[in-house]
Length: 478
Image (cartoon, rainbow, N blue to C red):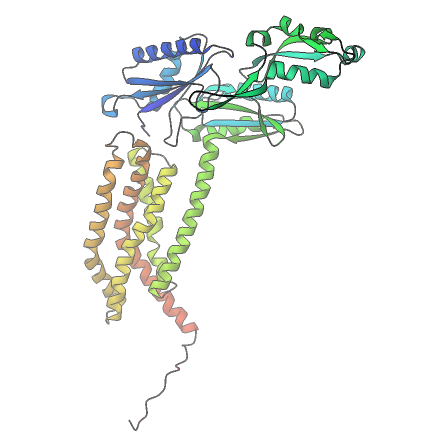
């Protein structure tokens, strides 16, 4: 769907200042405007939405109207990746929205397990397999951007000899490093704010200053922190995810010129090829999982719709068989849905499924008009064949008029005449195709099936006795 925009997620090294990230934003904006005449403008945010940290930014790249360009947002993602390689010191993920919210990487695989070292190895192995799959781009893991940290390794024996308990060390370091709320302050605007006291950032990041922190002894004296602990620079996970009680690592990828269905098979093979130790599992998510869940919900809705349509028709027509003839127009609509999506170049997605659910009421309406008129003529004394011929002539104009009205009403959406409605166009494509096929075939298939259901009903009537007549006979004397 042509939404008229695509998204670029930028990440700079952990610890990058806000000003430095803003400079990179200006470079990206200038480069995109210079390289792509389709770009109308960009809108960038830092540390907002799903991104966190001064080193991460999100761009929404707005494009000129569709009639003024030859490339779609999806067609611009691959050239944008190549162009952005010219900007050093930053990583980029480029994607186009599918019309269901912000652009996200469609391929997401999650590895669960208790040991972070094993997860790191498995994630690196899966990432290497993804690199060999044609059509995947921007492959990354949640462990790719480690967070620099300072680790404090306490020598328990030395601390015990010097009269320092682990509890006392924790109570001393927690307010200095993590901060402690000591009071509240009311601003001139009336807002109540917590007053938090802790060491300055420079002192928290300096190993030598941390080592000089005073630690109280049980006997009343003080010692330096570095007398009972070693302060070492290390790296921690930039993002810690958990599913249940286990750690989780995500391996994500974007698409490069292919549809999601084209890479689902190779991705599943790469997942199956992992040698998972006991206690570890791998699962897929992203757009594939969302599509599967949406499809399951749509199938359930379709099943319920069919059941309720049958119940309503059976009660209104007083027959268990005629609703089957009327509902035969539903599979006929599927032919038009497939041809409509193919003709307009759309895909089967949640919007086209919604369009088919709409069709269920529209196409049965045509069959109801035909069968109801035929039943009226049968009750008037005509045989079924003549009644169907007369009903076809009588109801042809109403069926065509209502079908044309719906098709013409859907054309602006199908042709995306109003910018920004491209993501919903597949719904109109499905409705238009289904209406055309079902309206034409209903006039042929439904009468034929109605004759068969009538014949079946007559044969079944012979197998069952007629209902008893509880009426009173007339008095001959009267």
